[in-house]
Image (cartoon, rainbow, N blue to C red; front, side, top):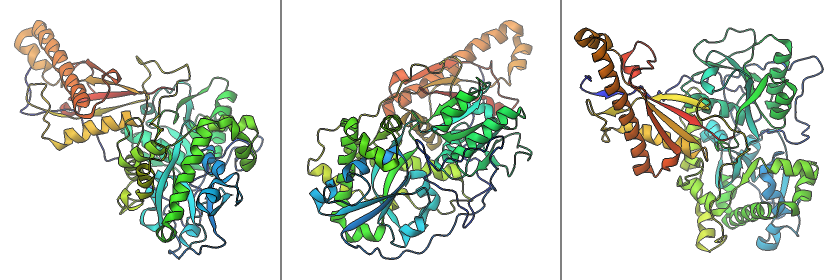
Length: 551
């Protein structure tokens, strides 16, 4: 085969024109509203009436300036939402109310008051009316420098609470190009679909109504008041037969409700059960944390102790958790199945970026910056601005929780996609090779970045696998035909097939050797010039990455 002096594979396309619409002052969507079993916040549609499509918000609200926190009555006020991921805090506190029988008071001499709220109260946190709260890492990226807070610990990962439901004919994220999905703006489900679109190379376009014309080359989003409303809007569209929506991104139990009621017309494309990009963290008023480091030590230790109580003996904690959220024991058990409560070594790896089986704080933070785009996050601070790691480090040095190990594993439901036909998504990558060879140019930083991007995709999805499909340019086929007829074309086609396979194999080898990726998670195939993506020669010199996740 003959090539130009340097061979390139089709580009990673890291820059995507995402988010044309941001959040307006005074009308910002709730960022921590997950709903929950029996949640009164669920916005089910009235009989025969679909939820309204929300206005697309165009700016982030300004938060109140920071003010000192006044520590009163030896009570640390922390706000949580109705979500099983916060079960460890409730278990350690013995409920919501401050109590001398709580783990916090018995071991560190202070009381904690937990308040359940579905409102976003970041201004109250800034103003010192709250000592702490809980949120997901993507929210920190959205608010950035405005948020006067620090993050001393990870609480856990959402493992199935959020899901993408679509019409039955849609099998992968790439098929949402030109279609419209309903979700809730700037909640974790908005970030979830934006993250998946980014990995699939799809830009985002927002619509103000279902009657607006979708962008034919992008994934189109419409918004409802919350995630439950998004599921209801999709269900209403299915029932009406208007086919204006291809799906919705929402949270449980709405995900299951919509699919079960669809009569087979909708299915779950994916959940975050094995896509660990929705990570909950504890955040504390920065001034409070700086003035009371010993109390922060106790909060972090108590959180991890509570997480251990729930992880090791969940049945003993069902009643106290259920009372806090007004859930039955069965509901509580079901909700706990959708979370992974983090222990000490998982926390340390999460913040250091050393964790191999899940997303890291820095990785998720930067993914959110990319997903929401520069219109929203104009000058994002480094993620290290938020992290205070000395409290976890002190626990480790003291030998606390030394029996614990990292235990994040894929959750298998017995079903699963066919590795032959149903990847969650695919994307094309451009690598730089030495001319007419399968030697990857490791001095080129773009190659390194692309390899690291593939590694991150595997990291955030335990048990997932990738098929690396090599392709080469078909621009010289007619030249070969003129030079030697069909026999020569077939000869060159075989060489092209071999070269494309060898180049995919080289990428696989680099992932194994440089990043210790398990070889069992990487398959390769060479397709030569048999599957051109278009007439652009550079676009046909590519590796297609197909990402198969476990469900």
